[in-house]
Length: 102
Image 1 (spheres, rainbow, N blue to C red):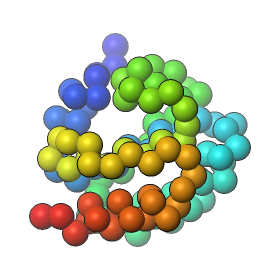
Image 2 (cartoon, rainbow, N blue to C red):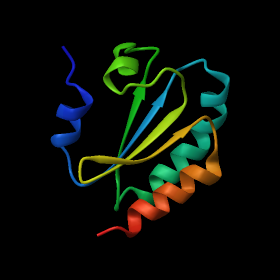
Image 3 (cartoon, rainbow, N blue to C red):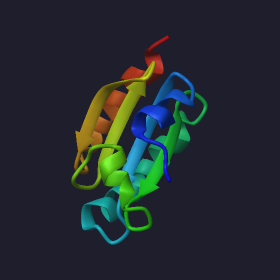
């Protein structure tokens, strides 16, 4: 049994990003190299967790999403942003915004 979003979210620090993707999904495959660079750039400021729905389909229900890729931005246990699709500009905006929060 996997924890719910609420349970998972409460177990970690105050700044989190959940990258939900699916192996074989064309937009996800295009986004992966960019997300890897972004995650590396912010690794000291933000805890990013990657979920692959190809290996764990329960992610859809646990995080209340119905398509991939999706990037959820969480601050103090509240979702402050959600980017659906491979919109790099929006993803960078939210990473930067989240990194600046105290």
